[in-house]
Image (cartoon, rainbow, N blue to C red; front, side, top):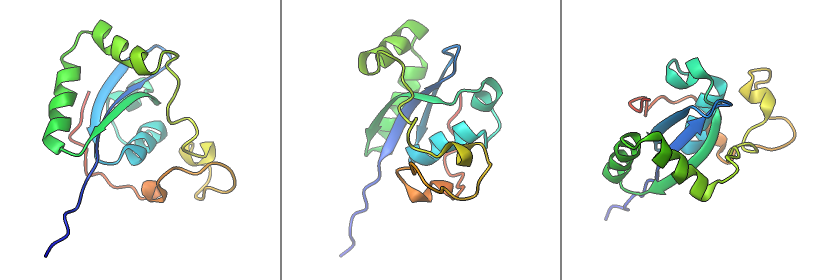
Length: 134
């Protein structure tokens, strides 16, 4: 008998100092946020410096995650900001203590002392969910 594997999928919103918004979906939130913060992938978030995670939700259904991403992307800005504000009124970076700054800036190849990302596999660059865009 096969063991059923359960996956978690995340719908997330990134922003920058100007509060520009990016809505995405991923199966590995820690890795994806690391990619955004480190500017590893070309595109909207790298171009506009969106490196602050201000909202996320999860589901174990991939189709539900994709549909929710599309739904949020279709909203007017006011509705997106209300969603963020409902759970994160200060627009704090929800991932601010996930990574060592020297790792994000590319100054070090190891985490050293201090706060480590919640998932040690974060440093393995895997580009399996690039389909998510702006």
